[in-house]
Image (cartoon, rainbow, N blue to C red; front, side, top):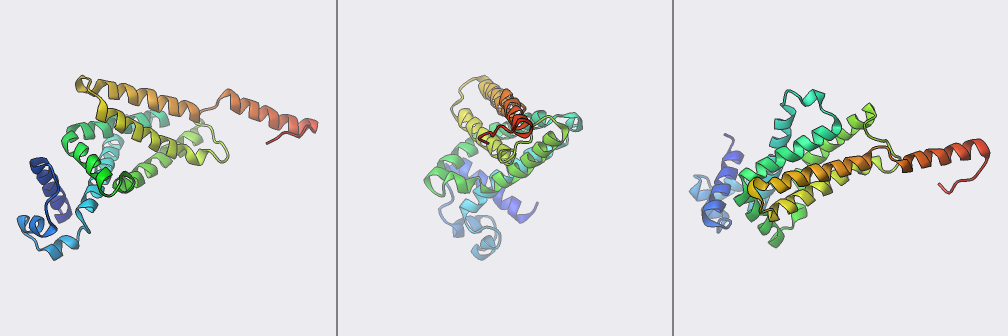
Amino acid sequence: MEIKDSLQEAYIEHVLLHGEQPKTVYLFARENGITEAEFYTHFGSFESIDIRIWQSMMAEAIREVKAQEVWPEYSSRERALSLFYGFMELLKSRRSFVTFSLRNGKNRIGLSNLFEGMKQEFELFSADIIREGIESGELTDRPFFSGKYKDALWVQLGLVINFWLKDTSAGFDKTDEAIEKGVNVTYNLFQRSPIDELFEYGKFLAKNSGIKMPF
């Protein structure tokens, strides 16, 4: 195990046992058999460990869903659903740490910083499945809007995490339902709608009848 990974696991264990971050980097480093200077060669702060943990969880979820035998057969929508379910399963297995990290993130560095590494992983994944969906015709390529599809999925993920934190249903079944409904609603917006047909009709009229359209 790389030293970064071992420090990350040691940090998680400390938080779960004590309900707080280590008191100082010096004490944490000493407990793990390294010097304070060595700690700073790997992490700039405890907050940077938190950021890496969230990024690692997203990367792990992406690896796991892509390793599924049925992955090549999935549509863009199914791939999004698969990642949402997979990522939330990881969070469920680490709920005690996750709830601490989110609470601590609000109090210290802010959630935007806490999720910065995770968001990079998620956006790369989302951009790929959205591009594939547009190329296959599953999703509509809308000028000025298609590039925002991944942002809509990111917002949806945030809504699901917040829902899960308040979910008291057995096995967090309500969260699974929220994922299905939320991702499906979002993807329905990505697909062709009557508004798109109206827009195409307007362009046809403008091109063939000389009627000036306000778009």
